[in-house]
Amino acid sequence: MADTKTKPSDVSPDLLIDQAEPAGRREDARILKEIIDRVTGEEAVVWGPTMIGYGRYRYTYESGHSGEAMILGFAPRKASMSIYGLQMWASEGLLEQLGKAKLGKDCIWVGRFSSLNLEVLEELVRLAWSRREDLQAMFPEDA
Image 1 (cartoon, rainbow, N blue to C red):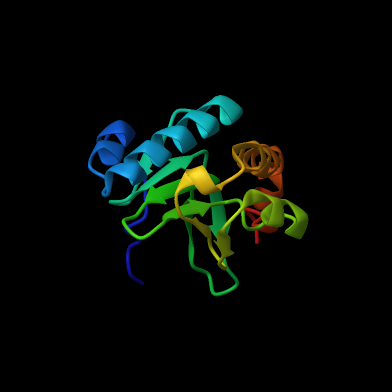
Image 2 (image 1 turned 90 degrees about the horizontal axis):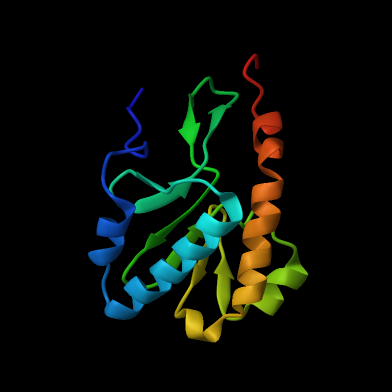
């Protein structure tokens, strides 16, 4: 079985943000990091080469594959910001209020934050973080 590349590293989250392109993505990543820092009270950790994550949970799939993943996170990619952990708990109403966003299976993609309702974004982060225990319940250790 292949070793997962998406695991915690010693890279500085601020360094990763400083290297993001274009400049607007860096600005938005700083805003998002500040929101998640404040809501979670957790220290950000770089996962894999490109994602900034908060918290962690263990999972085991029916196939037997197991590992560890971040509870919340984001990747300041060139084309859009990928935000992880919100899609599972986001209600349709909140996503509609967020602004221009695309819902994926594993993340929400957004463009520039100037087109988003940041209060709704913070509420989505707060909701996802408050439901973090539900993730572990979905993947019990003894399964």
